[in-house]
Amino acid sequence: MTRKSFRSLLAADGPLILPGAHDALAARLIQRAGFGGYFIGGFGAVGARFGVPDIGLKGLGDISEAVRDILAACELPVLVDADDGYGDVKNVVHTVHTYEKMGAGALFLEDQRWPKRCGHLEGKTVVPVEEHAAKIRAAAGERINPDTFLIARTDARAVSGLDDAMRRAERYLKAGADCIFIEALRSVEELERVGKAFDLQVANPLAGGVSPILRPEEYFRLGFKILPYGIDLILRVTRTMQLALEDMRSGKFERMGTGATLEEYLSVVGFEEWTRIEGSYRAAEAGPGNRGKP
Image (cartoon, rainbow, N blue to C red; front, side, top):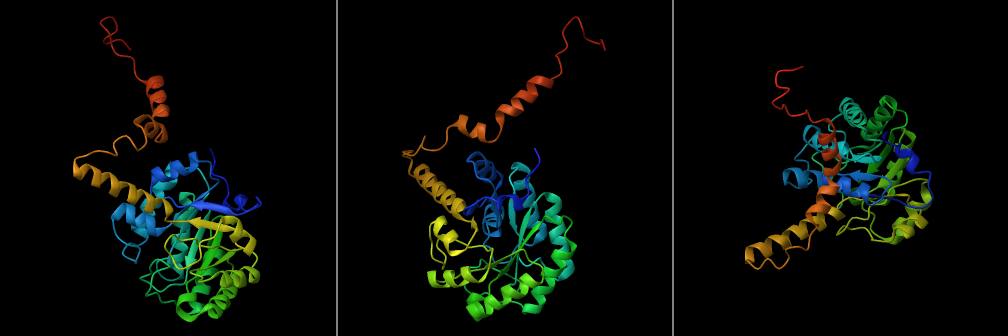
């Protein structure tokens, strides 16, 4: 099956909901649940793979391995968080090419200064607007596939205010971005203002973050099409594992049997298909009458 273009998802009416996949199992579950696409963000990927926070401890070499494994497990169009591109314009182009070759159809590139951090955490700084505009120009001009969808993200709202963030967004669109993403808006009023100013954009309904959490239809009404729910799954998975471990530690095992059944899990990871392949192509066992025969 050929992976559909990310841009094809934008043609459908209504909000585009992109659950965040922190690992390959999550990606397979997202596809089985019937979603049209999904999102891979650093917050979940580095937390699940390395057990560290999203504060710039891992770079392209580490994160791209996680992205590679997730992409291999799921055929849906995917939006990948490419952080700041991990360096200057040549590093940005290398990052874009790396993810394009893996099959990513859309990428974020943000204007935080490295080491970056989750957009809803304190302590962020941003680079000069000219520096990030140059990165966007490089990414747009050098992308392998002209269909690759580039999203310019700015974290300036928390650093220099909404006016500066909106000015930056305009510069990034002129530099070649297909879409803008002003991170960590603080109120419905800010969402309304930004929603009226740009044609196509991203909202980030981050669980526990600083932005208002609205229903997808409300975001869409305000002007936000692309909605990555980047950390919902990993937060729920973390809590479920905590409860299961507490239950084991207590010796009560009261939660035994409350998870997926073995059969359900095997179905998710494709056991039936691998069993079919094994049965179809297994070499015939040599019997007494055919040992040594070609």
